[in-house]
Length: 305
Ligand SMILES: CCCCCCC[C@H](O)CC(=O)SCCNC(=O)CCNC(=O)[C@H](O)C(C)(C)COP(=O)([O-])OP(=O)([O-])OC[C@H]1O[C@@H](n2cnc3c(N)ncnc32)[C@H](O)[C@@H]1OP(=O)([O-])[O-]
Ligand SMILES: NC(=O)c1ccc[n+]([C@@H]2O[C@H](COP(=O)([O-])OP(=O)(O)OC[C@H]3O[C@@H](n4cnc5c(N)ncnc54)[C@H](O)[C@@H]3O)[C@@H](O)[C@H]2O)c1
Image (cartoon, protein in one colour):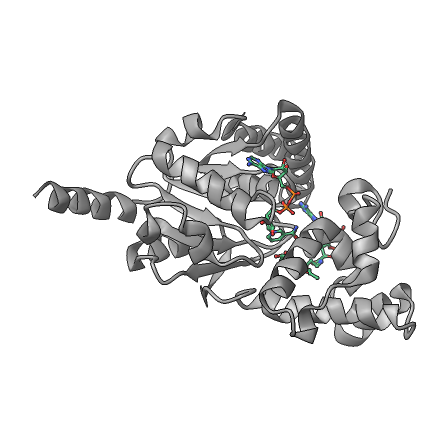
């Protein structure tokens, strides 16, 4: 009986709209997701490991909001300032994930692309979060089922894969793992729409849709350059002017982060070592070893101001 009642309460609560969101990881992606959720009226807590990182995240959100407001309120700059202040009020920050998830409807992870670290995070939060809370990972390349396996809420666990820069990119891949309930999946689709995004449904397969196509393309561009068959500048210009991409592959690698790109490739290579599409790149590995992680550290394939 108690089980039936619990199931009933769970089904009522998980179908209710997601209002309060906890984002774990205030880097490139987490800050963007927090910004978009707060801009669409959600109450957001952004969590990272230190106050210094969170200060940097808040600064990044404010400057991104300024860009949005400049365009949206071009005629009335004072309304733009009010918009920014209203959005910022919807965001608070914390370094203690377990305490803030207690009142949350959805937890989204945007921490480092490492299975064990993500499992440890969700395993700990599973004990702290209310029963109705949905967990979702923004992983680029890991299996949602593998991440969820550290929790006892497989039915309330799915994938929400956003794209960088989150405020500009319209797509969200919503991933249904074998354990994800239809109710959870529907709630994640609805949440994506409430953010003003266009969701697509994905199976829990490596790279979902976009990265299964994008990662081999980007790696092939690096290999082409490593073979001495084109400069990175020419390859970038070629793909922009010849294929209509907004950024060339080297520009995009720097934008995404070379550490994140390496995590993705290494993970897939480990799982599928004979697949030439996922063979590691010596040049990428060298840049990461030198701490040249792309735009976020000021240098990657290119130097950034
Ligand atoms: C090998 C393994 C690698 C795999 C990686 C996988 C990673 C991951 O899982 C998947 C991804 O995300 S894949 C990555 C997927 N991502 C891509 O593929 C991205 C491809 N790149 C692009 O789409 C464009 O280059 C951008 C939109 C980034 C910039 O546009 P642009 O024309 O080159 O330059 P612009 O003139 O400066 O900006 C134009 C407008 O955008 C506005 N704005 C920009 N950033 C903003 C922000 N943070 N906030 C607010 N606003 C922002 C700006 O204000 C301006 O507005 P205006 O009103 O026009 O003045
Ligand atoms: N960079 C991209 O273009 C992109 C796009 C889509 C998805 N993703 C995915 O999003 C995730 C984050 O990527 P990113 O580019 O934002 O990384 P990032 O390095 O910019 O940020 C990660 C943040 O997580 C924090 N962090 C790490 N472990 C933590 C923990 N246990 N608790 C709290 N905070 C922790 C770090 O301090 C850092 O601020 C990864 O899974 C990545 O694959 C990245």
